Length: 478
Image 1 (cartoon, rainbow, N blue to C red):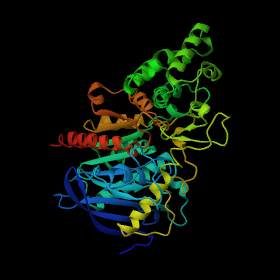
Image 2: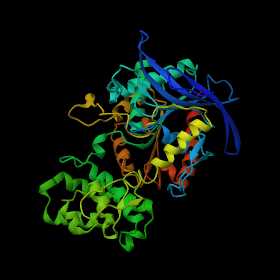
Image 3: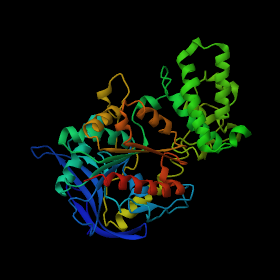
Image 4: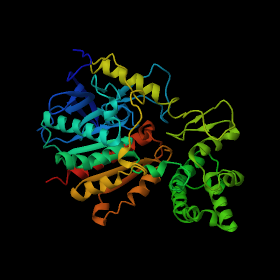
C-alpha cells in the first residue's frame, strides 16, 4: 500500500538486516504524526520513520532511540541512512560520492540490535510541514523546536506504549543542541527521563563557533582541527609531520589553552616578544606563513584558513570535512566559494538514496519536496537568548542533576570544521559537573569530518563504540 501525504497516514513494511552476524527482522512504520492543540486543531504533520524489532520480547520494555539531525533545517536522513538505520548510502572508503545513480545497501553497522529506532524530521524538514493556515515560524526557533519535537516524542511514546522502555536521544550537529535541550525539557514538561543521549559532532555553546569581532574563544578551540588538517595535507615541518595525529592534536590543545589563550586575552598589551612567540607557534601548528598570521593579528578565522592552506596549489579546504578539497574561480580572496565536502560530496547520494529507499522498500511516496537540508525552514528564532549566545550545556547539566543515571556519549571528528571536537570538550569541561556526574560522560574521536560515518573505518569503529555505550548503559537498569 502506498501513502499520499496527509494527517496521521502511515505505511508498515517488513525488513531484515544482519548485524554482528545475527539476522534482525523488523517492522518499519513510515508516515505522519499529527500535532494538535488540546482542542483538536491541527498544527503540523511531522514525518517519521520508525523501526521496531520483531520478536524482540516485551516491546513495552525494549529500548527506543529518538533520532534527528541538525541545521537547523536538516532532515534525519544523515543519521538514518549513514550510520544508525538498517540501510546506508554506498560511498567510497574515504567517503566520496560514487558515480550516479547512487545506491544504498544493508547496514551491518546499524544500532537496531540494541534499540528500536525512530527518525524524526522536525517541521520544515523532510516531508514535515505546518498545517494549512499555521505560520511555520511557530516551529522555527530554539524553544519552538524543542516543544514540537518534545511533543512528538511524548505522542509516539504514548501511542506505541513505550513509557516503560529505556529511552535514548541521538542527534547530530544542531541535533545535539536539540538533544541536550530535550533531555531537560522532557523531564520538566512530561516527567519523561531518558537513559542516555548521543551527541554526534556536537555544538552546545554557539559562542565557540562564532568568529565575531570581540569573541576570541573560537580561535584556540579551532586550532587543534587546523593542526590535524595541515598534518593531513603534509603542510607541516618534517618534525611535526613525523608525529601521529593524536600526539600532534594533544600538543596543539596544550598550546591553545595556555600560551595562545593567554595571548588573546592580553590583546594589544602583548609584548613584541610574546607576539612573535605566538606567531611562530601558530605557524608551526598550521603550516601557514608567519607573514599571513601577522596579517590576521593572531586570529585565523575558518574561511581564511580554508582558503589559505592550499592556495598555492589552487585548492580550497572543506568545512564539513576538511579531507575534501575544491577549486574556486580564482585563488584570491579570503573565503571559499562553496564547501566541497557538502555540495560536491554528500548531498546528491543521500537525497537520491533516501527517496529511492522510501519508494522501493518502505512503499511510501509523497508529492511534496523532501527538504534534506534547508529549503523548508526560514529564519531561526533565538528569542530565548537575546544579546547572548545559545548555550544548552546548562540545560544538560540540569537534566544530569535531576537524573543522575543519565549517560552522555560525545563523538567528534578531527577534520570537522563545522563543530570542532575541541570546542565540545571545552564546553563540557565548563559545565561545572561534580566528579560523580562527569563520569557519566564519555568522549570518542575519529579521523573523519562532520559526518563521521561516511569514512568507512570510522563507521566501523562507531559501531564498536555504540555497542559499548548501549551495553554499559542498559546493564545498570535494575
